[in-house]
Amino acid sequence: MNQLHNLASALASPDNQPRTTFEALCAFAQQTVGAKLFTLMTFEARTRGAQRVFSNMPDAYPELGTKPLNETWWSDHVLDGHKTFVANDIDAIAEVFPDYELIASLGCQSVINVPIVINGMVSGTINCLDAAGHYTPDRVAASEALKLPGVATFLLNKSISSRSDL
Image (cartoon, rainbow, N blue to C red; front, side, top):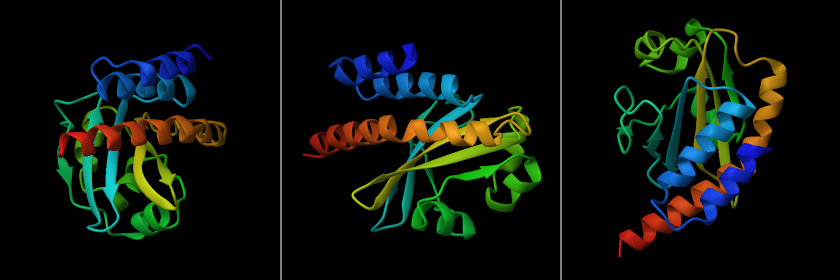
């Protein structure tokens, strides 16, 4: 519960936003489901484009880097179906993510992508990666707790981004 309190405090803080909140969400996700690698991706429904806005490993996965939308059954499942994606071995990751070798090189062989749905559209995903077999049914169930903080975080990011676009 301490990390959730820290996340609420981060959201309220005027300092270094949205990074302060991204880092607090990362800590909350690590406490809730575990994640060696944690990233946040935003999605633009109109263009079907994706942008990485946070990474706890920016050398391997740079922040603000763009990535072609993964137009596979993954996008049908996550972006269109609003369902969490789980893969617990590198072969399952390789089916949908072309960067699977980089993922494996970081010691990650499992992934959970939690879609953050706002007003009926996926605004982004919370992406947690860890060792093979890490995302057990209990951890997948626990990932539901990331959705509401994720909504607040993505809304904060969109608010800040729209102000800086003016």
